[in-house]
Length: 92
Image (cartoon, rainbow, N blue to C red; front, top):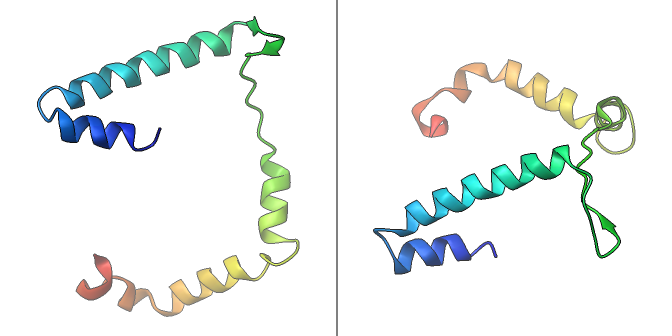
């Protein structure tokens, strides 16, 4: 399914982007409709309920396991090498 947009634009370079834009609009409208409704099809509930656990995610990234030092090291390296980050060789 991820190759379909590229193949569509390749096979139909003139109308492919318009068809893809229409499909994106249709998918967005369906997503909004399913988010507001509680539809059941073949005993599957299609209600979209988005409630991410941001606190637990942040805790696991910064305080637990293998990731606790990576972000502090990345920040420290960015501070130490701030001049080299914007040189033409790395800016691209």
